[in-house]
Length: 111
Length: 116
Image 1 (cartoon, chains in turn brown, purple):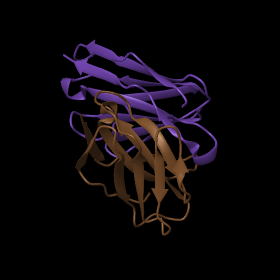
Image 2: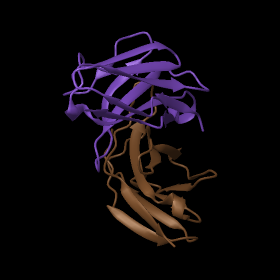
Image 3: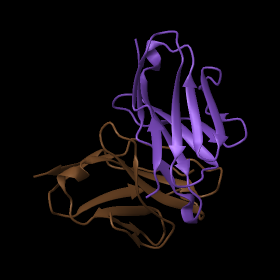
């Protein structure tokens, strides 16, 4: 599976949009981009995934560049409870695929 | 989203004993489940892939005789840490693959194991 690169950390103000970038320049045509987050001492929480089109759900929006080499997770109105480690993962969607976690980006939402 | 549940959430065991952790997919059937381990301030490390009705596939460096995985049904996988030692103390997390578009994988809440 392709590798991803994320900044180590970032912060944003409560109520503002949090834009979390991810580079995946070696992504192949049938690999999806998945985003998960992990709040301290809990299992990872699924956020969103996409192949090439932008996606939106109740939690976030995922913007994937046209060449698919990078993407941005957008939390439209960050709250203090969004403080977590966010993982961007690229993986095939097949039955035998698996998720390999990198270090992720630590998002700190400040009051 | 889909629900994956682990039990117990916390367990303390004596060195040399074995401990079993259960992972259940509550509202979907999972032909594939995964077991991860996470040490403090580190990322999740995949230990093994558990397939229903067949032997688990272990990642390099993970001792299959120490970490026994059984995936006896489409909703249950178990991880047994045998002859546990203090260095096995960790946060163990399971996940399960849900079919459909993107084959989304959902994670359990995790299980804290402390070996004393």
